[in-house]
Length: 262
Image 1: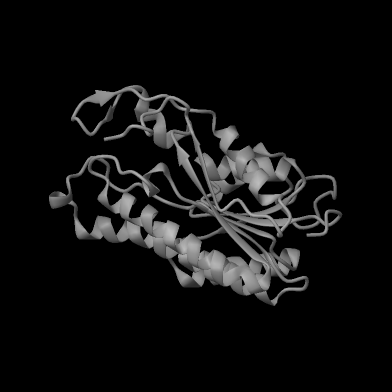
Image 2: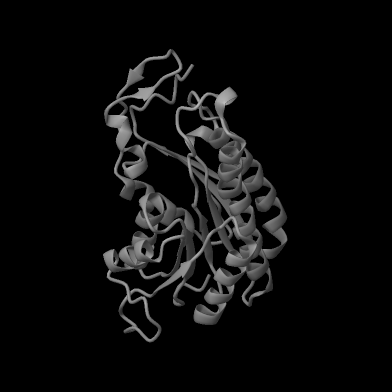
């Protein structure tokens, strides 16, 4: 990438949690960012937190955010997102493939409703594929060619929690998606990596303070880490030259029960 040119990113699931933290980190450090998510009001909150101008023609010194309502499981929404990015910014340097859902928590596999399974698969896996495919096409065709895709995996891409079959299956699948995209992107300067995150402090992890089900059946409180530490890690991965790639990174609360699970 040309260091003098403003870099362009898409962050999916940008309305809350890790997606919001990453979008804010990128906007505050000079990136222009398309914020994608299902709720426009939450995307606007993210842009405001970063001090970003969400309208075309914002002051050049103000971080430039474009809010695009997007359901990543819908191909038409993803196509519209990429078209909006092309129209506004002309190219794409980074996709942070972050949108996801845990699904119904604590439901044993024999009781998991098929519609709930499909919702998790459609969001976490199909949505990640659709966004990566669209970004890949854009990065292959643009001049200069290339860009970077970072998939949000999870500690669950390695080791499951009890009663998390849908989430764990999709996160394991994301690892295969990352590897295949990384291999196929080589001829076109498309670098693809994955960040596996454990216990970042977001709305999704608030329950950990009161206890999380462990493999031995006990409820145990778990430590969390500041989500901004995750955001800084994503930015480090994003700002490497395309000749270098963090293929997989694991960022976790230091004393969480991951190493040693089971």
